[in-house]
Length: 198
Image (cartoon, rainbow, N blue to C red; front, top):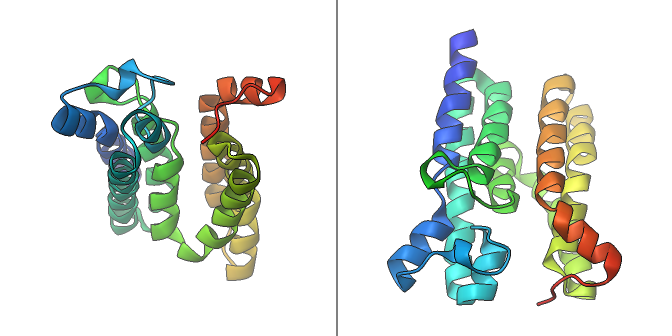
């Protein structure tokens, strides 16, 4: 069984390493989004650099690769395999093998992963993201709060489903910590009142 989990992790990391933002910026703009703004490859930096269409394509691509990784993980090793794949898809997105280990911050990947693991969890997470963004116009604030909400949301969902919570909640906690780490500079700017707004 161990080999199945190892395969889940490896495949998810390789899928997560496909940086949609880099590919879109190269293909559509003959450019590299990492040269601009935050230097990230995610939808927010694509929005600020190339506007809405590029950001939507990037978000969809990043969510899809994580969804595929989690689907493969579930096929290979059940629900826990999907949870493990979610973690490694996010790791691959943040530190992509193919693009110099410079990636995004993991939000779209997390959305894609959750959509496959339990779509109903997207409801509270979207609310936690959308309300702060609407009020503050800071995308990072919504992303941080949604990331913080992920772990308790998974814990409550496991309780409601009668599932053993240790592994899913542990994986959710790792993803939360990864996203918070990726947003550490944003948190400093938010505390200083200097964060970029949309």
